[in-house]
Length: 229
Ligand code: FPP
Figure (cartoon, rainbow, N blue to C red):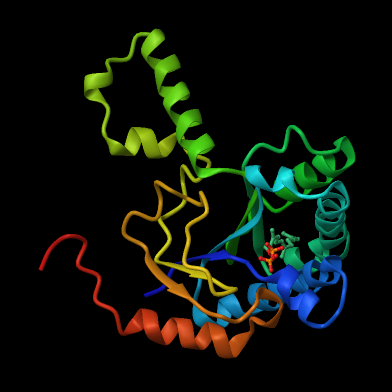
């Protein structure tokens, strides 16, 4: 069973360059691919979808591109929130939205709170997210608990995992990366310890049902042994 799918949506820029278009058009088409995938999840009985929208490293991009990405998230929420609610999609954010523009932060908070009771699909958007930053944050939270009197010797892996942004989410079963690279890029470092990895040359804006079905078939044919035999 594939319960939780995680995706590194790579290749938007190259998709656009190949067509002689500005990179922004690649990101715009990338949002369309995300909308398609959200709609496909119920058909494939995927209950959790986690996507990498903006990393802590993406602040190094040109200001105009950062603004485009933020605008697209804004537009996505304006346009899609009603539909997402109808589809029973719960939205969560993994990452620190503190540095985002106040208007976008409010829109995100509203989307998160008004979808909080829904559970057909849990859509987690990694936004200003970095895996190492998340691990450090969890370590700090535990350190604070120790200062309040908890004994670190009593802690188990679940205590550390519980302080991650993904605290109450299951670990991903499959991680897909589009765009041809086979890197993790600081995504879900703790959570993917036993996750299957599948990459495709297809650029993210071209990702659709054909590619999802291919990934699902590859996943189904793998044996997950979790260190056993
Ligand atoms: C990587 O492609 C893609 C990103 C950094 C952004 C992904 C974001 C979206 C698809 C939009 C998210 C929107 C919502 C609503 C969550 P790249 O630009 O690095 O591509 P390249 O490797 O070809 O340059």
